[in-house]
Image (cartoon, rainbow, N blue to C red; front, side, top):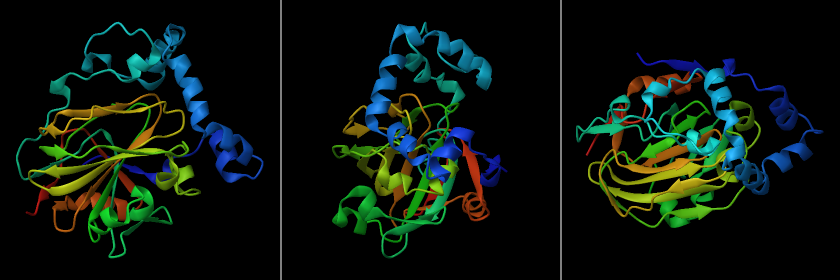
Length: 282
């Protein structure tokens, strides 16, 4: 049985509670969720002046640096996007295995016949998420897997299967946090800036991977590969929590039962990049 997290146990900081749960905090929220604020903060995180923050961050979050490639970091963002040793994230290469594209706290949702799925009391439309009615209809009846990354997770992500990719599509938006308090008060995934890639995979048919920015995430960086193999790096997030969404067509895969059960019971399932989370039905 995998580790799971009770969403009710994730308490917001005082600042987040003020911004998302009070009228006086709305003005501060507009400032903090603006892309301009993220860009300004990113300039500091990309500078040498941010280097003293690295040791503090490692101590505060108990990060085991032996898992990562030894590098002398020139800025906090270089540290944040550090590369892990391959043996610490083994990839399941069995062709029928559906693999996690990233580290994260996973929840799973069925997409109904109207291309809608429900998260934390909000209905999300694929058409609104993608801003493409025709593409959204292709995934009616499918599955949406949401991987919530926190600041302590590995922030590089991979291709979950081999195949070819269309040109990534970037959609401008705001930068809300992806913590539960925001998900309960805003339609975060359709408000935030995001980038999606339509992939034609070898074992799961057409699939969509959506990277969603979050508060103080400076950039979503995709490598733009047109042809790729399972386990190859797709890109990374710079500083902040963030989200990867994997959207599969109807009957493309069967998700491990405990993941759906945990979601329905109000839990997130902790997964690591490359591990099996389901199997192909094709």
